[in-house]
Amino acid sequence: MDRKLSSDFFTEIRLMSETVWKCEQVWAGQLYNRIMFNTREEAEDFVVTMQQLQPDHTILVEAIRAELVWN
Image (cartoon, rainbow, N blue to C red; front, side, top):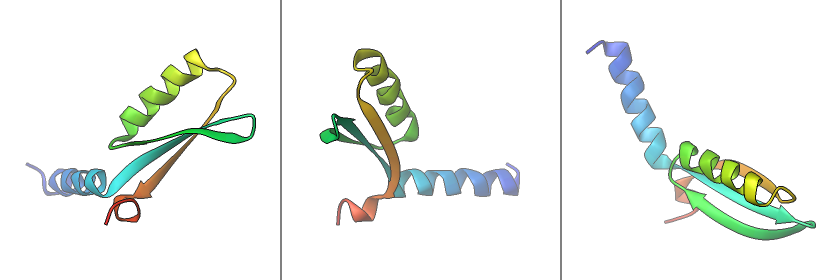
C-alpha cells in the first residue's frame, strides 16, 4: 500500500470516529427536530428524505467534534 494512501486512509478513519453530524430541522423559526449521525452520508441521506417529505422545513447540517457531545 502506498504510504500517502495509507496516511489518508487512517486520517479518514480517525476523523470519522471524532466527528458526528448534527442535523436540525427548523420550521416556522422553531427547532422542530435534532438528530445526530455518525457519518456525513447518513446526514445527507436524511436531508434528502426530509426535503421530499417536508419541503417547508429548513434543515441545518453541522459537523461537530464528538467530544463536545459525549464525554
